[in-house]
Image (cartoon, each protein chain N blue to C red):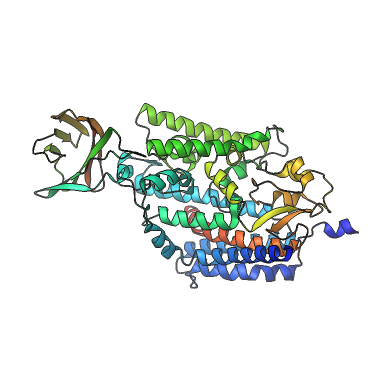
Length: 149
Length: 383
């Protein structure tokens, strides 16, 4: 038994040596394999959620994302909807948004990019306020706080 | 006579040390240069050469002098400094600031570090998603690459990762070496269980808030990497907390205790690495036959991993990070690197050589990129 333990220990140690030696040359391919694991995707709270609707205007595109209510074990009562303006975004943005596709506008949003001023006019009681309004590398992004009820 | 033989028992002759360094020399050469060193740009070439020589001279000295911790710590501290230098330098070039903005978070551009891993576990299991605004696969410090590096290193080295791989550990390791004698001599050993409490707390709060709470609120190393832009009372409070923790646990207490207090009392990843010590092949062992219970190793241990009771029982606790400080402190070579399953007191040199090769190789290659980049940056500043 003692000899088996010694042999097993030394084998495990050499396996460790082997693992470290092959770690760095194969790091990219191992990373690709790990990235394909089912849980290796960013939570919508960070990505902003899937794009649900796209409005294309001259030189500028508005992505309206799916509302995000993700929680740990169940959905939360509060969440947000993210709007992304791409391309040549005008200095003044003034858009009316129907985020839940029920045919009625849910809020109007006015953004003065020059002065970083954002004004939200809720038309639906589920719309609570502006969480984030910021310039991005692709244009401008806004997160509007929502509640479920 | 017996004692004389054992003193410096890990020491090797010059020729033997060269022979032991040769494999490290060849492997680090291949990894650092890709087999084709490029000296077309003088400062890049010099930076590469300096880093390459530094790594191999330190490894040679480990064999030649028989001392481990002294030379490990040099590379470990340089790694921590150079990583912070490289990161801050890049951020200042790209963002003109050490702080990240809301846009960086929205665009998932935050570099990932291994300290986030404990907070990912529950959300990954229950929501099948990662709660971090970083990149899954592309770009600098992406999530997949950092997970692979940490996972393999922890599997092989256990908590050794904290002394041979963690690019933050060098900060409090460095500060714990200031001063000759500790100003605070006794801290209750119970505190070393604190990281487990922090681990539980951050795992639960991260799952419930779907936010990496340790990174947002606690992590002291934001002081030497990047932090949230101070735009509100909340972000100002966060800045106050991480700066206080950096000052207290990474600078002041390590200087006063000569111990790595952040690693010992706070780090939640250290708690996971501590558990992984149970499965790794390498460990520090005590040869009861040679031990005269001088307890120098207890005083030397920077992580409160060895107590007087442990010495009497002949076992090092699972908190050990295999830094080698206790091994260097023991004049009788009674405390030594060992391999799981191999009885203590046997195969001492073989175990040390194998462990040093594995752990040093990991640190050398992992740190090479940032050390070369920081040397390059310094050379550009000088010339």
